[in-house]
Image 1 (cartoon, rainbow, N blue to C red):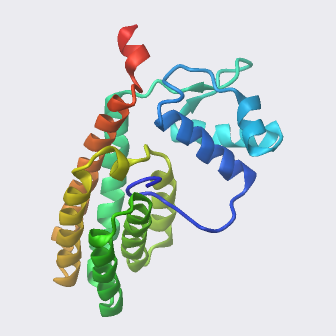
Image 2: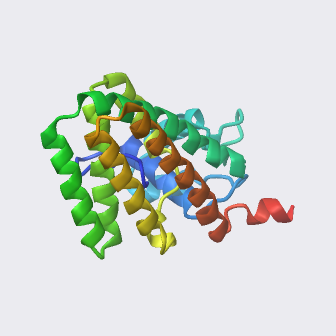
Image 3: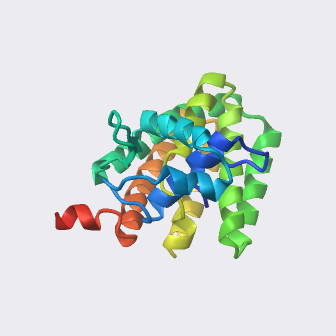
Length: 227
């Protein structure tokens, strides 16, 4: 999946968004590592675009903390630590937990039934890409049920700025995620605000630990550790 808890869309994206997605992909796949210089011409060429949307994407990624833009020196992959990655998921978990708590009080029976149907499909599919899409739909349905534009906006930003490939990289992650999702869905159906919040936060904290493991396996910190 592009991100276990992040944003996906089948709608056309702008060149700036496409550039940001490509740079994130290269970073979190291990093609680019902390401290590496980002070849803006190569990114632009890959997208068939000018450097302008690439530059705009880099400014967005700097705000996310993914890249650094020292004056007149180009763009570099930020020297993210393992704790930086864990902290990202901790923050994502806190905001997602707030959305889940809000949803527990507001969610309709129709949305609860849709969550169960999504989980049934997620547990039976053998396709990692389909799992990722269903995972996204599951969390998006909960976030929308919270009924807060502000929370949805923050979660969209947080969800896009993290490592990708959980279902492909960890053979046991689907089982863990399935269990977590069922517990969250049960808490929502029970209208338990506290359980929905705590279970969701724990789910994302586990995701942060898995993200670190995945990046380790891709050699993300290899050069920095050697130095």
